[in-house]
Length: 489
Image (cartoon, one colour):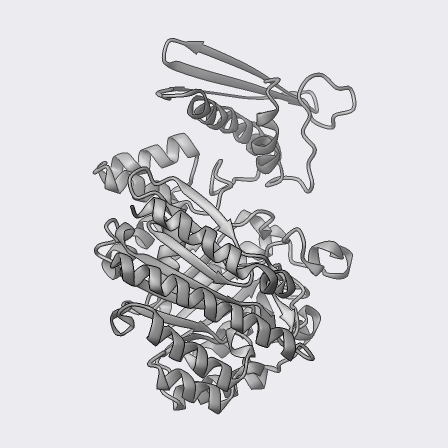
């Protein structure tokens, strides 16, 4: 256990129980908790045992598993999971807190189930593996199974779309920056010169990527305009952008889905909605986050609750028939009463999809840097709110179709996308299950290059700030095309 590669995974698990844990390997008289590990390898079997001694009592756990690794890196990964298993077990016994996601601290649990499904592992055997090897509870396995079923219903060729790509277009401007946000987002006021320069670079990227896709005969599955807030730019700039998309991208009429985040209601105008309708874009997001005005003020969103409702109805009147709305559980000052109010207001609108996020203290956000200013709900209340969301969506016939998790998420819970059946976002399925290459263009846009044979993922990100992007978009476009040539040769 002297290998420092153990520190990070053990710290992630410890942080599920305690705030800002520090892990030390070896003996120390200053530790608040001390756990003794023993590891043993006999042939292909690897075992670990852990003993936590506290308050005159021992908490013990052991676990063993056959290790079938082909190289040292994979062998250590399997060993890490075995150690994590006993570590979580003794901490659960000591704290009396059950971690429903077991040893999983990564973002995409459903990928584990897809892997079993592709290998044609029987459903009950797949459940057993998730329960025994990862300590995931039946409640969360049920959720994973429901999501897998919806994804394969919505995208029957999910395991074949690796020969296509999706495109993410990042527009890094917002009216203001929210306190919990770490996305590339710059207040747009007074920045029109920078916006114009950015759009020039974005048009160049679209043209070059579009030319490459046409030359290679590669189909686009989905296009997603994110940010920032893509509707922060003017109606004229939006019109020019979508016109260019139709001109340079291949076979746009047959792209399965085009989404535009209109997340900030204060950016939505009749002129912009007319532009969306003109270019046959009807899937948008209008994100209230909360229906409590004091909360919106606290997190830096300068629109009103009334404005959210007004812009939702305006979007409907302009032909938007696939609207997503986001709610966030655990925002400062909010508990079950405030969340019940948000659900009641959502019931009056009934969008096609509802994404329920659990607040995460992201490292670089204003909220994390000034935690003492933001009082948030405790683990028990956060879990009650998540249960309220599950019950509300079930009663109103929404189905879960994707989920992801984040570090430092309240209550060690998850973010879940719900939708009316048949209205699931294909892009959200693509990005979460990592089944195909996603080309990121624009400021701060991240690309995921996925090897079609091995599934290996390579990340590549454009510069986050507009100034650097404007100076280097040609260089970054060339690098992306070089990577694409290697993947699709």
